[in-house]
Length: 171
Image (cartoon, rainbow, N blue to C red; front, side):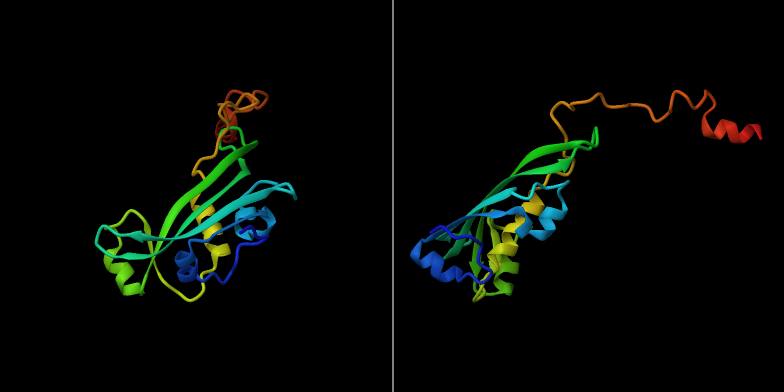
């Protein structure tokens, strides 16, 4: 089913039971924290997402309600080499398995590849998408090849040969 917005109150158990898929395309501005991480996002910039309900078996045993989340967007980020804007494709493709309670999720944490969460009556899918996209941002965004030469010196050629410290020592 295609929807305009990621639900803030999703019944994961029902979604898993039906195997239903939800999908949408939303404006980046709907994801406030993610938009703030971007450099001058275009007003029509969009984020695509899909959430599929399923049951997944854990290595430790048992089958539990799960959610397969995919999301992607091309985001304008600051290149850490030239400080210009670079368009970076950011994508998420993760499985979340929902266990009966926090204690069970904590006990199995680290033993499973999938993310383990406690099953709640209503999952804020919108917040989950935003959290996962923020975690997927590159630590050091950069152009493949910067469009302008990158200055490799902090000294201004017109400043003089002694620099600021040398000028202070003379006085």
